[in-house]
Length: 311
Image (tube, rainbow, N blue to C red; front, side, top):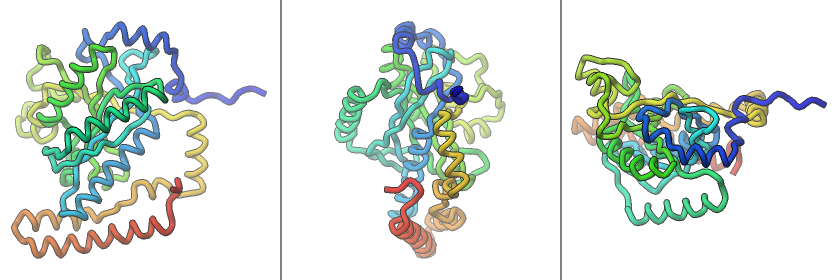
């Protein structure tokens, strides 16, 4: 019997270790600041990122009416078969939380957590940590909040300086969880930082390669460091077996609705935050009571019924 045709995504799950080692040794990304052009994510990594970032929104709203920014690490490898591609195989949340551009964390606890994760990964998998992700849970606007702040850029540069030269190129990912909830789709983008000595071909060039002359438009979309980093194309890969499973559960269950179900009423959250900012604390608290009630009801329903993936 002939073997069933394989999905193109199957190539991302198997690799020649010797070719990968040679690719890491060559380190072409150290001599070409824009060597990488595509980041390909597995279903496991993207779903875990989505779930983690959405949990930060729900947790923050329940606590004080403001979504919480979260952060995690990515595992994967540069693709030795396809030049300029980095493959992301999995993601791991970190015990870091913050509000907007301010991150709150117990540094030693985070370091110990990362060391333990790294040791476990080294024993069980051929991949390495090769990037980080974090959320920008800001209010819903016309454009997504997927950009590097000055703090993000500094973090990305530190990682690249530490890892790139050792054959382990580092990726930065930013997720807009509020927009993801609104669109019921994962809104995230992948970035790499330019080295300090690199000069962009045009001072007004933005991370996506466009030239925007308006300072206001550039700042609103890409932040103050718009010309110090660039965007990679973000794609997703899936094995032929995973495709079969997804086709089956798409047919039998509305699992996508479960994954992207809006745990909060975005319109009411926006009104609540506006009232807090306007100083109308009593009205803001009243709005948030309704929102928190919705969240608690949904969580209770989940505890009773579970979900498609089980517990």
